[in-house]
Length: 78
Image 1 (cartoon, rainbow, N blue to C red):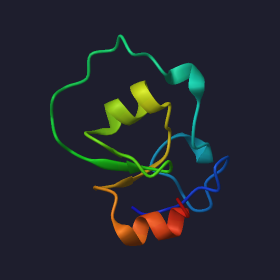
Image 2: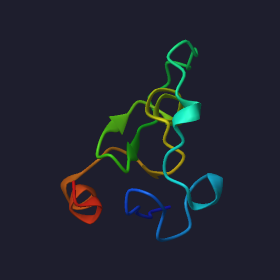
Image 3: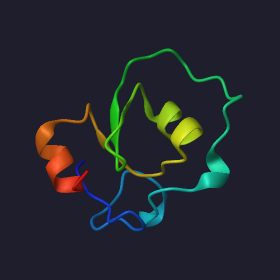
Image 4: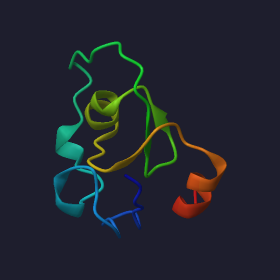
């Protein structure tokens, strides 16, 4: 599913969490994520190894499925 964020709220239906893009309270660098490569592209334009990494290390609650690509980065305006 594809959607984008305007840095505070998501414009279309997000993959998770009711339209919020980031929650800094979710950042926890002590969490153990599985070493499974199932990439997601965060609204910040960073490709994370999987959704666990995007949430635990980026605080992201919304993202694109798959790696960040040029066209996704253009949509995100990053």
